[in-house]
Image (tube, rainbow, N blue to C red; front, side, top):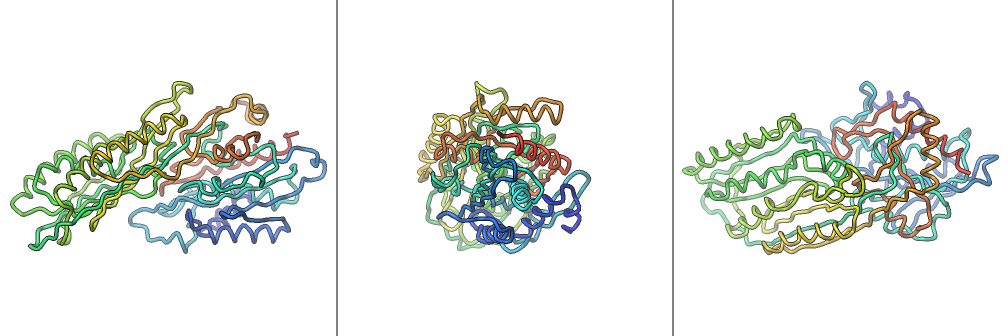
Length: 483
């Protein structure tokens, strides 16, 4: 299936991407891909090393005539978001991504593609392995665990890099030059409870929300996509005054992905089921109507399932439903400084309630530290009013834009020369590693760019072939233009 990918131009890049995508690389489980990159360096007679957290660093000397140019750091992350469709059988820890070409796009068969950030990694590998691409001295930095905590960038030591310019190849619109990003913090709420043991069999029913688009919880957060967790919370809130027992809730997944699907199981005595079905029909139809234009494949079902033998006690059940319904999800504040930029947002990412424990996981983002903390504390207030324990973790800083950047001015000029149009200079509502790297390398001139990638962090992810060609041409031009 991947053979047709290898015939695409530029072949050197697509072949490295195909090689990379044959290696499992879930976040926090990068052992195989790290060894793959180290073997790649050895096979190309390049100096390489790893740091204490697992980042890989490869050096390639300047080509003839470029020895006196500034050293450039090329940076991308090795891990990928692992999401699949509910009916797709796939093991991200053992299998390579199954890709195919459709028109001007490369897609994956029912899973995320890994173009985020695999195209960036493949581009760097192409430069490192080439014999005919001109460039100054290259310091290639491959970080780990960008998608679930940025621990690779956070653990990078201050003395590893000597380059004055860093090109981060991890954005997803080919007409944009990114010079800023949001910071983030993980907000988690947890409550323990004594389950109710159901001695007499009571009919159980499964409420399933599925078919949502999902997407990147930063870049796509303003688009109004459905969030399976919030939809389930809303349905349960409408049913709360009926005689239901919540047995289990499992919904969502990664913090940086908008939840696409989830389910709740409730037990209902037979004499109450008609009233509950009637309320379910009313609220589900309202939700389907609200999302009809933006979520074409949304499905909300209610069907009988296996008998359950324990449930959340009534007091805790009320707290869980109220919290899930009350937690802010989506845009919190738009930036007053940059047009159309989301300043702060929250993604209610995952809910797991079963057997005496309920956990709710959020990712809060903001380009302004004070509003990031304000939103995180607002979520904490909701949790703690319901006697959940709240934890803040995984905090990382934003990246403050520098409109006077020399590499920005150079790349704007080169973009116009190559493509006869002005690039958009933007900051993004996503977590780029530049913000963290800038803490240890405050004098480094940084910029981020990349090809068109659509549906990142979801099984609908696809990368545009013609855009990769544009990105590659642009990258090679920048490498020979830095003085």
